[in-house]
Image (cartoon, rainbow, N blue to C red; front, side, top):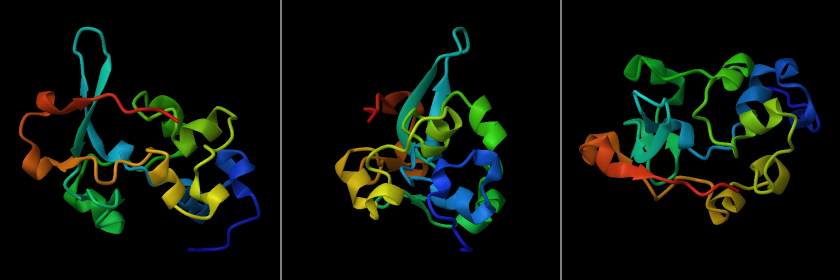
Length: 147
């Protein structure tokens, strides 16, 4: 994956290497869920419907490297994009660090394991359905608990 500097997550996002940027992701899977936007108010409603590439049991992309070939509108997050996107959760490591906040206490870089994230309820693993099986998104609106 590349060399990761000690406590790199405390550095400004713009200074991170590609490997450090990727390692910063908490792996919660919420960015891979479909959202609905109210045409009038612009309000975003989250759903429990996952992209077809998201493994619903683990909340990991089943083909991360080639995802854009299968899901052309999948976003590659950048420090600039993180500041522009309104639908990323407040618990997201990228969002928190872009705001100068610390990582969530359950983050794998602090705990050494993704299990703390699952125990904290921050992961969508086991709590979502694939877009291939879901039906109308309007039937799947959820309110995820934040950290």
